[in-house]
Image (cartoon, rainbow, N blue to C red; front, side):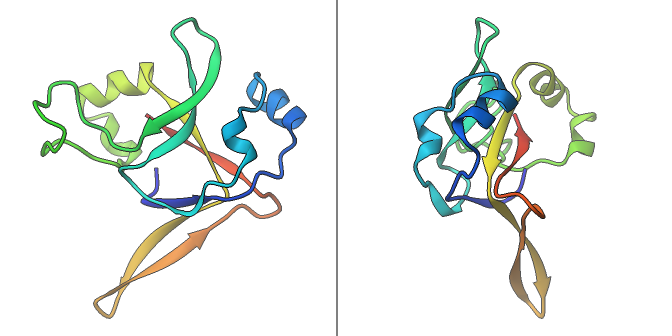
Length: 135
């Protein structure tokens, strides 16, 4: 996923949401969240529940592997590249079994220019919101 994103308006109707994701739009998407959502926060995510139905709940944006002994582990991360997943065993298991979808209006990535980090905003052309995959 990205390093920071925004979810401040849902132009998708409840009917369109249900048609796209297969369950009614949760109340959490009916109110604005933030223009600046960063790691280590609770964020709404669409996921498959243990009974194999789809749902939405707040999830903490931080990945700490099950083998880590503490939350602030050297293995903890909030962002990971898809090409590195194939090289790490615990990530392969997460990719197969614990995926989610995060809705957003846009996301940011930074580029270093003249010893400064400059944020660049990415947003979909012709749509208000879109989704990225998460684990």
